Image (cartoon, rainbow, N blue to C red; front, side, top):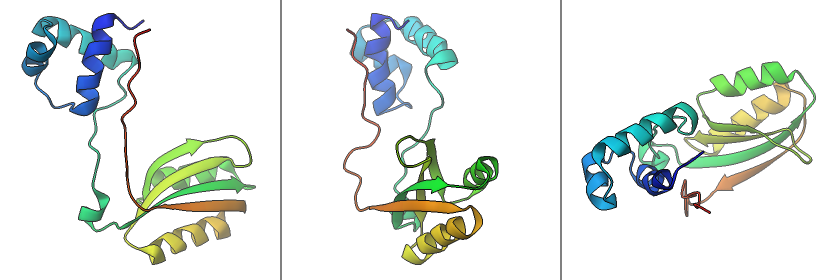
Length: 147
């Protein structure tokens, strides 16, 4: 169960997980030890990992896509392939007409097409739909409300 203080601390972690606890303490009016203890408690059940949102274009990866797929081959082999592929950024099991959603980044459209062709040829893809991301408008902004 989240406490009221957790709902005040979490937005600070979401906006900048590198922010010093002493700075959070000043901004929130909560003692440093309380913030430290609440963060440690949430690392066991709520916080999966600390990460950075990347500007893939600055790294030379100018094509980002969401690929929804329905496959007929071994799910185990497919999942292993996607998890280990260097272009995979995120990977989800979904419902409705598709089985999976893959978020992947590529240097260019040619690399993206080679990836989807590899999927179609090796994993019995019944159908797929690719959505190319043109621009990130907002990412990772959801915050739970204390109700």
